[in-house]
Image (cartoon, rainbow, N blue to C red):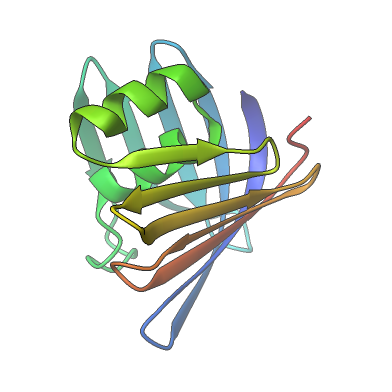
Length: 136
């Protein structure tokens, strides 16, 4: 993936809107966060199992490890995700346009995808992301 995305997020009544340029492949991920005027708001990098994040503007409730995990849950290989989640005691369901993670019978995370939108809801932590881009 090498593309621009529009991100809207909500957490406990707060709303955040950012643009991002995302470069991701099997070796890791780089994300540059931008405001509506194109000013740099932060940088996130995930390489060799290490997360690096710097942003004076992004609230600390948006933890970089959660951003990376949410991206992986939304886009990464189904078999690899299923194995990793099983190793953590979670189950994973992928129907093509939706993905769900369960702890027992309780839905922890839901992802709904279509051609231009990905929406992730983290029920356990109470936040939602909507990513807009050309995901085909």
